[in-house]
Image (cartoon, rainbow, N blue to C red; front, side, top):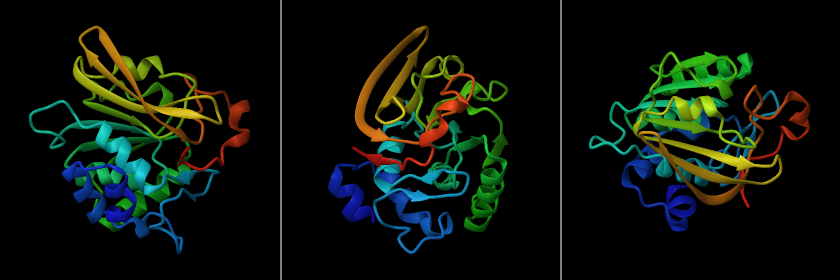
Length: 220
């Protein structure tokens, strides 16, 4: 998976590659094609991202700290299967992950424990509001698409180099967007096209926009 689907497509961050090799993906999705480079369905109309997208977003989110991921405070919005949280934990980050579906959060807790990543803190709430109690965050990673980056998430970034990675666009087409915070300045870069499930909530899409909630995570 790592050699053919990730390295061959240009991801060379050694820490990310090491983490992707170590996290047992099959524990997070019960599917015969768990290691294929495609999104796969979960319950509650959600999906697990394809491995390349997980690696690409993780590499883009790399903290701007001398210690890299080690003990970085990371907020994930959209727990899903728990796989992305496990990759972040394997990198050495202190991970808090928010999920709006309690069923998914409970399932992810069991998977994370089985895989040895039970230090991940799981929260059930509107992820578009972030987690102000835990802020500031070195990294915010949003694994659902919004029409724009939620303002609360920007405000919760560490003012000295906090980084946010999120797919931004319409329900059907988005671009992975990286935002870096330098004091009061926010610098944004568009990376590559994707298609993600929608981020629902006060600062995301409304519940009436959930018709395409089973859209798979995939590169365009």
